[in-house]
Image (tube, rainbow, N blue to C red; front, side):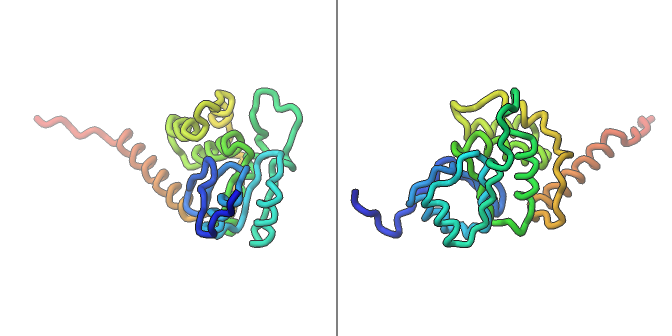
Amino acid sequence: MKELPDYFVQVPEAFALVEDGVYRCSGVLTGEQIKYLDTLGLRTVLILSVEGPSRAFSQYMKSKGISRVHLGMTHWQPNLGWKPVSEELIKDALERLLRSDSHPLLIVCSSGVRETGTLVGCLRKLQHWNFNSIVCEYRSFAGGKAKYTQELFIELFDIDLVTLPPDLPRWLVDGRRMWAEDQRQRFAELYAPEAPAAT
C-alpha cells in the first residue's frame, strides 16, 4: 500500500470533545489517527479497558512524554455481577480526569463505548445533567451496542464516592456554580411568600 502524505490525518473512531481539554475515542488507533491526536497536545491518556494500547500508540505516547494511566488493568475484576465496570475504576478515572494538571487528556477503551461511555455518563451525572440527556449522549456513541446495564450503572453510581481534587477544571467550577445558583433560584421561587390578593 502506498504511504500517505504527512499532512493526511484521520479522526479516530468515536472521537469527541467531552469538555475543554478532555477528549474521548476508541483505543484501536491507526497511524493516521495517531497523527490527528498529535494536534491535541495531549498530556495524559486514560486507558479504561483491560487491553493495552497498540505498540504504535505506546511508542507515540512515550516519544511525546504523554503520561499513560492504564486504570483498566489495575482495576480488572473477574466477576462484577451485573455491573459492566467496577465502581473503583470509574471513581479513580473521574478523580484523574478532574485534575487540571492532567489536561489535555484523552479517555480510551477498546471500543470507545463501554468503559468510556460509562465514565462520561458518570461525569455528566457529577455535572448535574438531566438523566435523559446523559442517556441520549451515551446512546449517540453506543449506537447498536447500547446496553441497559451501563445506563443502570450510571443512574445508580454514587457521585459522593468521588473525591474532588483541589485543582478542578474551570468548566466544572463554573458549571457547579451555575447549578447551585439555579437551585437557589428554584427554591426561592418555590417557597416565596404569596402576594396578598388585590381588593
